Figure 1 (cartoon, helix red, strand yellow):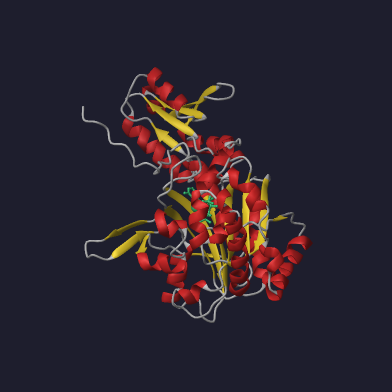
Figure 2 (figure 1 turned 45 degrees about the horizontal axis):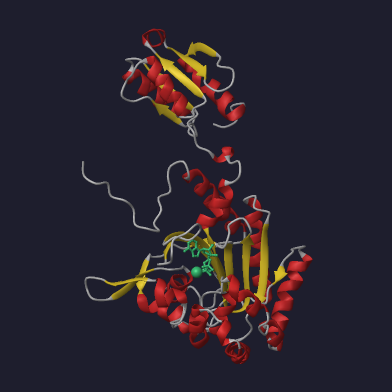
Length: 427
Ligand code: ATP
Ligand code: MG
């Protein structure tokens, strides 16, 4: 036998038993986003490398070492998207969606980063993200945060914590950056290798270090919140006022920075303590200078992205039998294949939502019942010679009582509607 081929490291399959949770997650988020006026956009997975270099920033971890970049057959440098915002901005500019409008847009799909694979960190992972363009005020920031709170709540995730910060304006961040560099220079000996590199390229990112040995040093660093310009301070107060009035609880975390260069003012993260070091399930912020940087007109913007693998991991800890998709019924047929498919198609006409598996490939009654049981179906429907001759079908409850009865085929859809969907209100 030839050696079986394995998937690429960091690229995971989502198996049939997991997809119901994924769909439940996707559909819940979809519904909440629609409820706030967000419309879906579908974007290419491959973009010109230049788009990410220009938007995410040359000296970020993503662009420096995490991108899947290669030359296509024409010699053009292309990159598998590591995130969705850059492509969304590119599309918005290209199709004239951003100017003189205030679109609210969301997207979903796989992202690619060459990171060290571990729990909650893959090389192909999935995000749902949303972006609001053309609105500079704190109200849209607050509304977006309230929306994320609602969608996490609707997913049943009520033990996640909101962290909030402001990165200020580009000007005050520059001044703060100098303070920070001076502070870390003073403690150069304590810096780990990563932080020494960042000190030259992107010192704010040192605050985001996950190295426990660095935490005390980071704790003592100057705080950006204490060096905000007046307008950014007022903006943050505006966000907080709406959140407070809505009864939201949150922590202001002055060390919260984001991994991408394009953020300014509001940044936020939802964090779970049940996922170890990979605890951030949703993260976002304002990026007022990005649209212009990518070649559009000056357009304020804010957005967020959620990591679906991490949310699925949280959901998997819960009882989700209600989203499971076992068939409702399994049709056992003993030499009656033609009649079985005729009956099955009639049932599907009568009850569009019915999940019905018709036994395929024959087999003894015993082996077919075994398959019916393994499928998770609640009912077995049996067609043998006698049933077909009399126009009946035998129904056996595989789960509860084990009760069994034979009835005219014409009455079957009514019975199933009643038993499966409750009272026949479903058709
Ligand atoms: P982290 O600090 O965990 O690396 P990040 O700041 O790089 O996250 P973003 O680029 O803001 O993350 O992406 C938003 C969300 O996408 C993250 O909060 C996380 O839930 C998810 N995410 C990011 N990278 C990965 C990955 N490699 N595998 C799985 N999920 C990821
Ligand atoms: Mg990262």
